[in-house]
Image 1 (cartoon, rainbow, N blue to C red):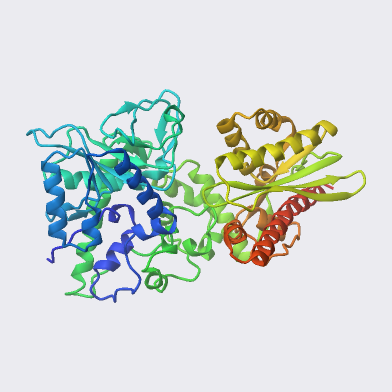
Image 2: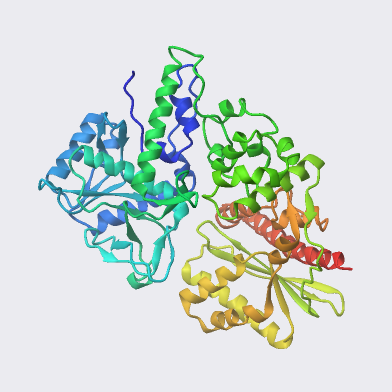
Length: 569
């Protein structure tokens, strides 16, 4: 059979993509198939280059091989350079290309290789590192599984207490396990089996600096489905997960290649719409194989995962119409053993079935509770909504002040449409906090409404970072004065398209936004125009568009609150 290799993304990517890529009966799409391009769209390329530049600047002994890629040197030339650097014991290798592992069917280009413990036969051993534009850590008191290194001392490891690796960032670990196997194949894998991830996390102990998080690749902490376990799931390591997924992709590729000799060979995988489909070059091919009523196509909010959907398929349910007419209680005895990898598996299926029935009946939003909703009200109310730029910088604090005693509402905003650094972001938040603290002092019964915890999370983040007394004082009043309206909606409503503010305000309260494209991502683009356009009239008009959008958001929150109160009457 034809020789082939898989890159580091294959094991974490949709297996249908692998099948399509190796299926000789399919024409290859014009769009590139490199999964890493998606990371570039999310700012990954810029973060990667900035991080590598910082590492190179702080480590004079680092070997930088990226120029060989830039000159389009052949694969053999690039891997020879990487092998030479490893054999010489370079402490840090940037942009290396590891030798092909034809037996294991692997190819790989780790972002970084860091010298670790020597191999068992005394050769220089290395640890692979990936650089990702997202956070990879979360709190867990007492956890001591992880280690970290500062960018200026990558070969020095220290314990990372009270933090664990985020399970949903498993994909980066599968890439690291792939590179680990490549290091093993060429004889340069460190005896300490760690993989490193540089995320956007900052460690206060290191001056809020960027660090490499070292994850033991043999640490069993990833919850996965298991037919043999009594619980229906097991904890597996990144290496175990990778070996299974990579092995399956090899099987899928081999089966696809067989269609070159016999196009009647049935596909071993069939398309299911997942998040990855949004940027996959094969989507049009897969879409043509799917029923228009397919569950994965039509239920896009809080969707069932791939294994849950496969479980339903095994029970004869593929479409919304079939799930809408199904007896969920009758399905559960066979369904639950197949989906015990998920918490709340039964309630997730019931929710999906309810959405399926709503879709079948043409209903967008439905009340699920007969209990009174009872949103707390006040004589003077503030609806709060913030706007953030790319990088999560808060540049606008918008508030609608409503005096219910006289029936009057007034929009207030604290904003900046100029380039803003961390100090400027804090100063803007402090200005808003002083205004709101003064308003609360004037009206002690005042309530502040927000939709989800986005606003309070940012407020606390800025207070923690700056330790400014006004921000700390406002945070102290959150429990008494702030009301998360989303919690009341979530407990009383279900919607086909989710319970975002836009859905609930339009479908429930009948509110309309002035802008034709009212969404957060669009507002980020508007902000960039309002700050950087060379035309002052365009800057002014776009800034006004952002302010109107923010004002409509807070007025929508008030409309939802009034609507919920009307349902209790």
